[in-house]
Image (cartoon, rainbow, N blue to C red):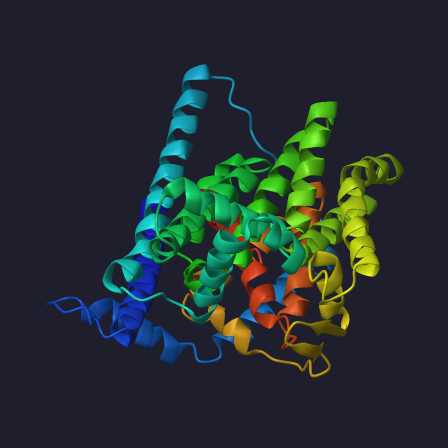
Length: 421
């Protein structure tokens, strides 16, 4: 029964992701031909017709599961990780888990690479912008990223990777999404492994086959990179939270600062959700003090950037400190004054969930079984609440919808369903 269930889930996921890939390939002028090639596309078409209100149903299901997890009755037997005393069984289980990770990474790499193997032109509108930034840094030097962008660490990483690879800019941006796809899949595994080892493999596989990964790989490279840092930072924090030694604390401080200088919105999300989760813990005073020590250096770094912006206002400096006001409503940029006053309620970005009805259902199961009764689950609940709310706002909807931890929740849900069979 267990293997039958897993097989059906795997078949549904494969049909969905292959069908979406076929549709994307056809839109590029490269239709996939063959006797059975149309089956996945037909499957996607049928599910789209059968679930036309799935984006709206998904938000109701997930929001309801979140509320039930917080307000519902406490489970008499909480989920605990069972430690197997057998060395042989522990080794066998570890081998299987790493084998699943390798499989997930391979699946992610292949799925992200396929469109780029049949399309010679850059894929995605924002890809051209990122290519121009790398070309500009090649002419002006890497300091340009610090002076003129709000994501200096991210662009410096791109600059160094491109130089290390020795590839041209166009060829580099064919390989970069594959690297980020592999990194995202592996970082999800690392994060889930830090608090629920048995679900890490399922979460990584669901990440590799998710439509959100495919969408991010098109041209949202800064979000891609920041998502990797997000999962790695949270994974390290959960692993070292109980024993925060000097080296571990220093590592986390550096990771927080790197996240800030890569995508400050994700950095703010980490501060809010970890801080709120620590505030709800039993030893909140001690926990919040330890968290403040970890996060304070990155806050100081942001203050320094803002200080530079005040001392060297545009047009001398256009970097992180100067552009910080862009997200607060109004700022002056090299292309003129930008004002965000047109935010509206928008459900269109939840369409990212439409092509994969399996994942939202498994995520609801994960929320139902994994209640917010200890730190990791509280953090994931807060994370889901925040991103679900931001995904309904037009100016933040796309990136927030992609940051909803659906693969994590669905991986937990799939593991719990397998355990009950």
